[in-house]
Length: 294
Image (cartoon, rainbow, N blue to C red):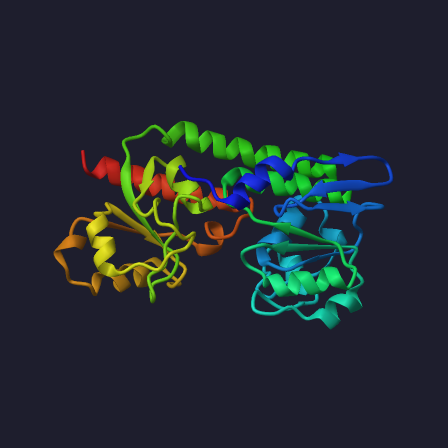
């Protein structure tokens, strides 16, 4: 499977860190070293999944600002919001006086990140692309926030649950899977995306793994030509019935016999410990499909 440049940087650079009683330094997913004179006590996150990562790392009490749609855990909903992927509120961020900002490389505007750094703020830029990156980022936040023990425990628990799913389903007969991020336009993921990693854990094959873009737009004709045995998604539908109905309206022969599997989008499209729940749902649904075809 191909690996993006960002993923390669995360492997070779992010864990190149050192820590003493009074300082921490850690390479981010750009390969830049972020140095703190003391554990971060005031953290701002610029994407919903990063707020979840902070809480998972045991540093929720240090979180002082979050991006829009940061709705999990419930405590995140009570915090000041500082913008979204389109634009961050620089004035509000400055007012919150963060000593660490967690950003998302492919989700936040590069210009916003640059302006924050020009203002003298420390920004740790992340780009989770594999399931292993979830536990890696939990440990990274634990290092930067001084909650290493709690972070290690949470990361190990996540890794254990993923390993159990991989052992149970990873070697099952392969099924061809199309994953839908959004319905109109049809958006999917390539092999470098974390969701493709989940599909692989469950014994599936991402039919667009070789696409050149991380989240390409595809046509219905391209989906039919890829011959998926299962279509999985949920981002553009609030319930399973709606998801199935969106596809059933295409009365074409190529969709006959295809299984439609709805999964809660926040449990599969956010790089957080909750992705285990989405992975479990997908694994079990694919196994049910195998059983029905015997």
